[in-house]
Length: 297
Image 1: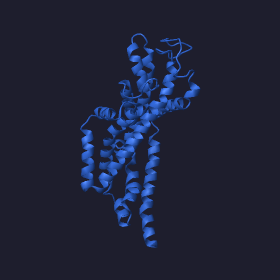
Image 2: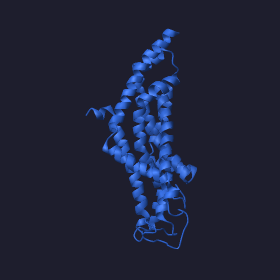
Image 3: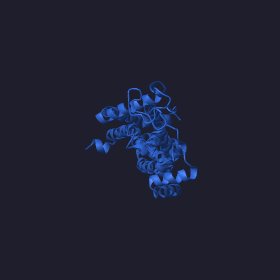
Image 4: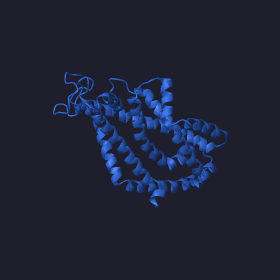
């Protein structure tokens, strides 16, 4: 019994030490201008979302007689068709757009990672069945698959988030499956099997931590795409419904007045673009910091 424990400690300690060294090295490499700029923009919008009631000068859903008023000292982003303050609606819209984008990515990453782990680890019939299902999903372009889900579930912000999340699952499943197939052949997995570790423990404790970097990079990059996809569905009238102040819905509300009231689309568009740009910067920076192939160039 004691010999088995000592062998387990001997096998796991070097692996833990290597993981800590890689983690410290990754943190040092994260100090890049792109990651810094992306983090600043993203933190700005997160602060705006959390402090929306204190930052917004008006109720985002309350109208007034000042309809379609251009940006001024009273309404810095102008007002919409119903006299609602555009700045307040953009700030409150950050809550929905950011939370929906991030939560959608988390959910799709969890489901896709689980499928990829099980498929890559067990192989055989399990792998065949799961990957055929993933390939069926991949036959549809992401936006068409999202539209199909919306057609089944009906319009709404929650259903739009589900649709975008479902369309992203195959990316995580294929990425994780390929990484698991490679990781499964490593000595630390063989050592864990020899020690009698259960399949679940091997997948979660040994394989998943060693492939987590690629999952994090993909999730960070996909967060911006998910946010834009949800906004696109809202723009088409399939996502957030009036009077919900979501960035895609705000763009949809202003498209009929673009030539006469440019501010209705400009400010929500800039907000959506900047948040997506920040997430893309973070994703690219993380990929460069965590991908050994790129580091060795």
